[in-house]
Image 1 (tube, protein in one colour):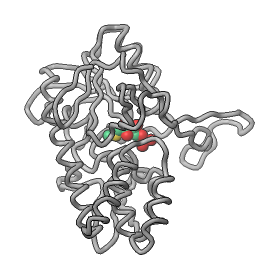
Image 2 (cartoon, rainbow, N blue to C red; image 1 turned 30 degrees about the vertical axis):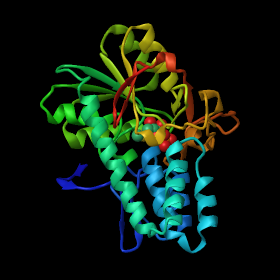
Image 3 (cartoon, protein in one colour; image 1 turned 180 degrees about the vertical axis):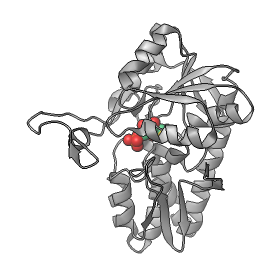
Image 4 (cartoon, rainbow, N blue to C red; image 1 turned 90 degrees about the vertical axis):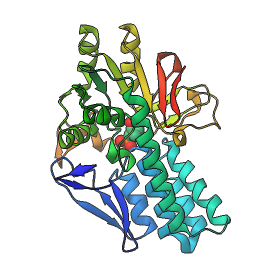
Length: 317
Ligand code: MRU
């Protein structure tokens, strides 16, 4: 991705440390977090300094590099950092398998990062064919370069359509409570793509009004029957899109497909700290006696999905 005229990846390995664009600080501040140890990487994943399924996977791969002196302990710590995104487990197993074959951890992680970036580039090329000149597209959360190291999943086709001169407009769900929509807005602004941010509750209004032609989201885990987990709020967008006859596509690399589980019912949904709801930038925005639940993801049954955009093409379901 391009930031202030310079090409940069959301995370990169330099001087034996993992450098991560700190997603907690964006879009207000552009800062790089440096992970020197496996514990620093675990902290970065838990606190969402790095977030988004493919980017979490790449961070975990480098976590293994930083914790290679105690491989099994590092693997365990990383594995328990977040429960829902399948890429995390896929990346850890990829690291372990290749280390057993005698390859150097640093080389394997580099190969993994490049592989994810290439997959996302192909997702962009495949998904771009769905986007016609003048289309208005809705996306949820941030499935951009920040979430995948580069290009993005849902944002990759949008990025490419714009680069190819198609005039498009993007509706960006705010995505409470972590407001990943602001990250999407930041990426779209950097790319010069026309867009606006809407509160999550407004998506149904625009979908019904006929203001949206296409919905594209990412995914955190896709079951064998093609039910998929993604950021909380995705399910209701999918249902409303179907109700209004609007195509709903999910963009994800094959590293997000979990062939070990038969349906979405088996996906573990992360419950995050209630502080994410009541406290914004250090300020309490509601009294603390209010009871809160904070699920980070929901599962959308496959019947609401028009198709999956992967590196291998568009898979209609
Ligand atoms: O909690 P997050 O911000 O890590 O959740 C991210 C999402 O739900 C994304 O849509 C998903 O990981 C796909 S990212 C390419």
